[in-house]
Amino acid sequence: MEKRLLAALMLAAATITASAQDYSGTTFNDRIGHGQDSIDVINSFSLYREAFKDQNYAEAYDSWKEVLAKAPLSQIRIYQDGTVICENLLQKETDAAKKEEIFNTLMNMHDLRIKNLDALNSFASATTTTTKGNILCRKAYDYYCFAPQKDNNKAYEIFRSGINDLGQNVDAYVLYYFIECSYNRFYNNQNDLQVREDFINDYMNCNDICEMLLEQAKGYESQIIPADTTSADSADWVERVVLAPEAEAIVRNYQPTQERCNDLFVKSGAADCAALTKIYAEKVEANKSDLNFLNGILKTLQNFDCAESDLYYKAADYAYELNKTPNAAIGKAQKLLKAGNTAEAMKYLEEAISLSDDNAKKGKIALSIASILYSKGNISGCTQYCNKTLQYAPNTGKAWLLKASCVVRSASGDALQKSYYYCLATDYALKAASVDPSCAGAANRQVAAYKRGYYPKSEAFFQGIKAGQTVSVMGATTTLRLQ
Image (cartoon, rainbow, N blue to C red):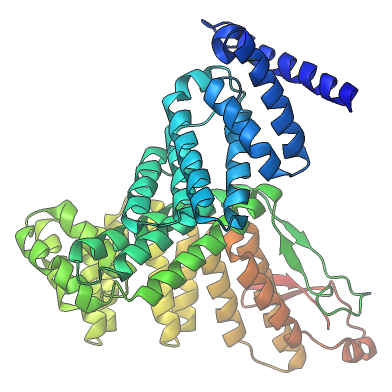
């Protein structure tokens, strides 16, 4: 035991000294104190690290606190370990006074790290360098989850400070807890229009960040796994898409976060048209000459299924009079769609496409037109606009999925001929997942459903038909699949 402790002390001294040498302008003694203090720090560091490795956080706590108090610049590790130690203790502690003390220590640790951030970053590795925004977000999470007497407003302000500092580089868990905090703040102040507007803006910001990262995931190549026709497991004998590891990590973290945020937002009822009208009615009138403001309002109302309200039409008319922008033209189209004038509405949607100089925006508008046509049973028109969407934005998975649905709805002929349609639809669904990782789940489900339309092997055998043959349908070629 004595040899083990001595070795640990020597390792601790060497580790701390190495860190000190990387920090220009200070010496080892400057970093951990002088004389007996430096010996105490080394002893405490060794004791807490040994207990930490054994996950004995209660035993590690006091020694860790001493290192933090006497040598806050000794290592980045003491802040990382301190978060783990305090969070674990707070989950188990039952004594109110002790819990308060641990929580205050955790909050003070985050503040101390911010205070010494430049010095700590000067000797940090690429994986341990951090920002004030990162620390604030972690502090906000710890406050929100572990404060003995939580104040949602205080948690909200810390979250918002951190997220504002980070911009779009926010971890998925931070986004979720922030929107939950914003929701709770709104829930307890539903008559406060400013709090309601804050919640709406927070949700939109979180959704935009998730959308941006999911779009980024499209840059990684996915892999199509062929069917295992020798397996009795039905899940194995349909093709499916497996995402590239980088894309899978983004989708795994940010898609569930986006879905949970959406569910929470729908549950809140914060953005019903009546509430939005209360928030924005006077603002629209007061800013009817401000095109940027009007376009922002149109985007908000579009996002929250309030594009059939009088407020939306008024904002669209004002915007269209000022300048024929894509959002204004879309607003005019929505008004005509509500009146049942689809043909005239399509003209404005086409105008919106021509007015935009952003291919991603053009693609979204074209996809909206495709969806409208699909809902009205115009399959050829829907397919045409799906193709337009893909001309502007080739990685729009939803366009490929909608094309697949159009193909299935077009199926005709005998069982063999119909199977060609399901095979082509499978191609399109697999393409959707391969270009757009956020569509992978839906695409794989559609492919699993399409297999029921494949021609039976038992029939094909007697007709000399084999899987893998190239067949043509709807002006396209596909590979024959059998069930």
